[in-house]
Length: 281
Image (cartoon, rainbow, N blue to C red; front, side, top):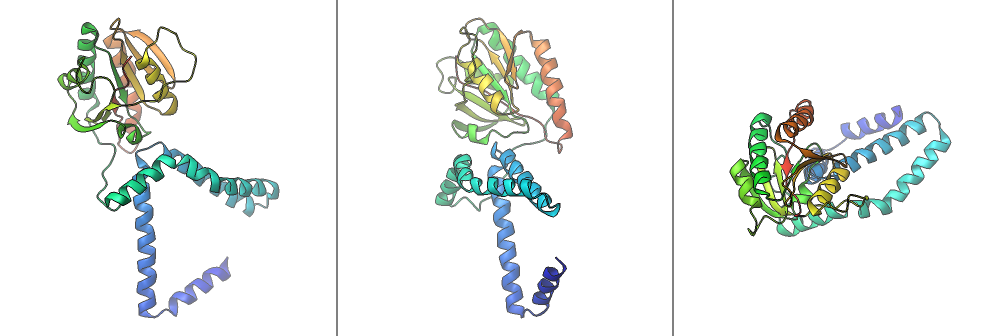
């Protein structure tokens, strides 16, 4: 290792000004490319896959340093298989990247997927909307985006980027309106998109459950999101989390459960969770 660093430092000392500028430019371009890749996947579930790959690479280096030959060999073979698996696993993100290159947007301005906000204000508007929809039996699904971004889900719908309010949410889910039969994604204190498609659960569920409940379970099985469901048939309120559904809640109990879960996000880089809506039942 020492010899490698010595040779590296020797090369730097003997560079001409032109070679030094080219090397700096080379490093800067690679750093910027990595930065844009991080921005591309930061708001999607792929970020957790990247974290897993980093752990795998780190474990490979450590096993080699400790002379754990069998473990090191297994990890190296796993890395070879990833050459085939990664394009398949990251297919949605690769497609998005190519689309942005075609539109000239890969190097455009990227914004954060999460924004700081007042959780109490969000809950006030959310609970008021849920009460109204429950009384009127307006079917609705509201997904709270948390640490796992839902940008890939939001892109299946109509971009909105509007301030959250109870009136806005109720109007979206009014029957026979253009956006009611789909998912609303709320990011921070903004409605990011509406009429989005959510994955349905593949687990065995109560046959009486409609599409909204299945979608709520599906999105919470694949992400750490929270999903609030209002039944169109009965007006009953439910909450899905971690692939589990809590049914027949009143507004105050729903508020307690949401506040408890959202409070955990305050400690994560000062980033607060989000909410969104789902497929109709």
